[in-house]
Length: 447
Image 1 (cartoon, rainbow, N blue to C red):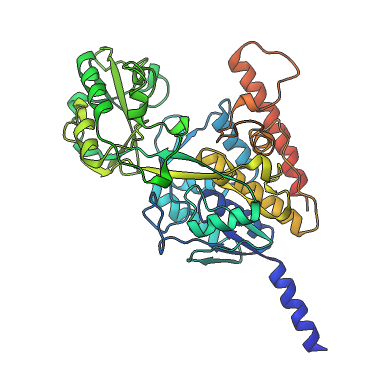
Image 2: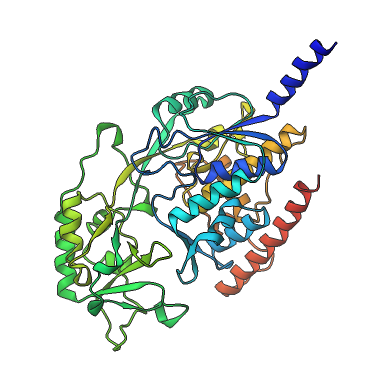
């Protein structure tokens, strides 16, 4: 009798052990939700044994493009998304609170401390096994969150499981320089229009300096992409040199917009480069909006044409890498599982979301939906009145020309009452979303 009982127990243990592939923002959020629900989780992360072209460490939730998690204001799409994620007990936002650095009205973190905090919180949450090796098989009870730089082996497995055609776009990363190498006689801290803390360091340029900078930027040498990396650049991560090529004034209406950034002596610059803190020690600065594919020598030459950065020391150069995502509308439900197999979920940028918080949000939801499915319950889509629900609806129902998407007020259904004032309208959107996600949270976590 005891011989017969033991295999049954082992089968139950195996069934209740969930596999999460990928230790990025989406993967760790999925793990956290499953661990809280009492499930055993195997988290596969191929780094550091096998690095991607953009990652430098084996740390969980390593931030690559920027250390900024964007606005905290709930009347902005990003701020409202964070408020919704906090309602659902986001691991990433808990770690962000433990590692944040000054960034005005935005949430920015010390990258190393953030990654360490994520892992500590995750390990303490339940029965987690972190397996540091590449995983190339997708079984039932699996959440795939391998990110936009998925390995070739896993790509083939995803193709086999989804049967969908892969789409490609490209993401460019901004350089980081040392704070001590900035010429502070030609830079100043200032908040735009004097609103909020002066957390950004501003590097002004006059008209002649700007004109010469744009000329050299457009003519600078770029890294030659490999044959498999040929493709389109996603608008939200447009390299600075590509943007500059659109017209001499394009940067002045983009990342170098000088409006509202007068110097302490009242002077108005022709253009301004903004630098954001990268760590708690004020030792590193990120060139905001300067994602680039220039060669390293050209980055040194061209970016040092910015007067305050004439002697800039580069901690990290900008790089450009391939991003990959599936054609989600043909593959996924609004609960992020495969239409042909409900026990396989996708999360993160693989689904076609763009942005750190959007990726993390899909991980939260994949974990919640998987947990409900394992308990014999039906996954419940979020209300589309929320930023999270509206984006998931887009992923599953977008029609022509599916492309990566940020959260946006344009994705949510209109208010019943027409409100002309933009700020008041956004406030009403936020109040409605938070009321609805609070009800959703009470429903899904009731048992």
